[in-house]
Image 1 (cartoon, helix red, strand yellow):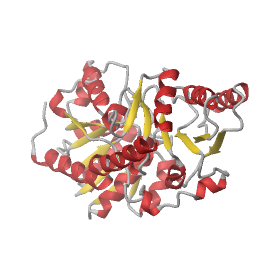
Image 2 (spheres, helix red, strand yellow):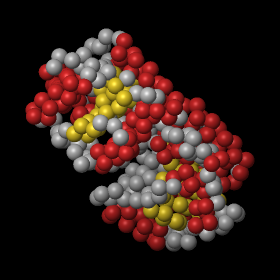
Image 3 (cartoon, one colour):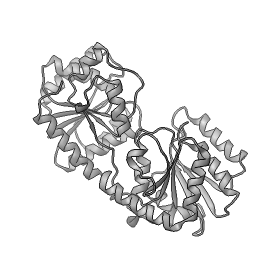
Image 4 (spheres, rainbow, N blue to C red):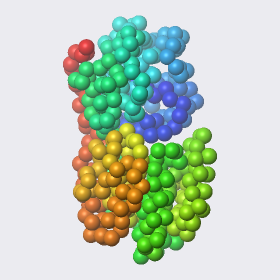
Length: 375
């Protein structure tokens, strides 16, 4: 197939990274992939590494007549089989461009985050009536699409995000590398979380657990992996001050940003995912693929990933004591940690592997090509 991947974002996060990753897997299956991106954005720079055609569109909002005309010319000339966008705002360029040229090219939207804005007015209906399918990365996002957008349920398809379980493989990674780097002994139990320094990721609950569990156990270390994004430095400073206020500087490690995510996860004994609200949770899937047992908040997209009592212990979100109690259950049972870890990797391979994802995505593309546009 000849596929246009659209992502007019100027940011760089999970959505943009996953766009590049999925393009790479589509190319491996001998598809042709081209990009439509915002000029000089980070995704523009990253897409260059794929050595595929890249088109630019300087549209950041809803009304860009000149860009619509330019894109309409591109779509007419290039004759794509499928157009797949990662951002709903892109539809406000793509749909008018298709309609101007009276093209029947199927167009799909992957919805990565929920919205609280109801989009069922006449203008959104005009846009969304041209959409073949909206792909939701979790059940909570599928429900959000139905609640907020003018879409029938048969036009909303569930397609979870995925990871490279071949790269995130505990058999291919040195589990001692990061432990040695931070002087963590074999007797220490290392509990880690991987997240941006952003409110709602659960750093407060994580530090509460560290303080409470330090009172009972002498062999615990807590690792926070990640860095603040733009505008989040104040929150990061607050979290680091909490460590001092709780007198837990001796057991809490801040690693900052790390590129060696598989090696960092390999070092952990327990993975913590205390996020208050998560559309999916790719870091959790990465940890599961690395055979790590976890303690996760029982909410939103996490419920699609973790299985309570099988891969993880789930706790009531934002309940720091419940989180602490469930961590303690894993601390006390090495056997449970091992069993959860094995179950976690098995589930990651079965449901959240990128090859499996690509199979399903291509199946959806074929469905869009062979079925008439649903209204």
